[in-house]
Length: 304
Figure (cartoon, rainbow, N blue to C red):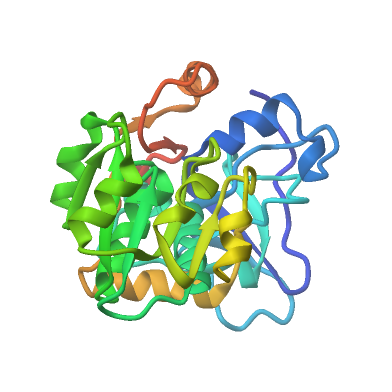
């Protein structure tokens, strides 16, 4: 850790006092090699946050000092991220945070929630249609299944057995052990026919391998990679989507509404202080499944 000058708000920007920041695998990969994200050293990692408005720049009318906010930064090009006491941000990356969530809970949603919602939008599913979700117990997957259920979409979710209780608690209709021989066949069997879409939140070529279970003219999307044999998509006119999250005020507002309606809730597995972030990144890089971790930066009681 080091000390940096406190940022000031340029025109059209705000400075946020960061109370908590979500910890994500991309943070660890950016720490070790930021080149893919177009970031130059020195830099601060971290994309999502919850906190309070500290300063508003010229022309900013939507916020005033002290407003409770959350937000997400662009995945590419963000040099000064959210693992810091203060962050200067464009106002379009920031929104009012749900009153029902404390600062730690709120920090667990913006990046994964925005990714999940934008993937769901791209798949263009209607109420009553069905989706197979890979990586459903991960950070994005657990929010995706809640947002899908909110729209009346039937969900089959594949995960390790350790994730099954969580998925059932989130209301997933069909929970499948990802270690069984044919996850796609199990989903088709349990749902009574081909799925309308597949959502890949895990990678490892699962998207391409699942196309055999998608109906003619269906859709498929991944937040990880587009790799494998896509002949099935061509032969049966399945729409393919590769999704890299975009920071959008509208997305944040829709997530807030979902929380306020009781349809979306964060699941935080661990809260760590800055001194523990090194070990947290080491665990992420080792491939351990540690669930959703939030980095707490502010003493909330001292700020109230």
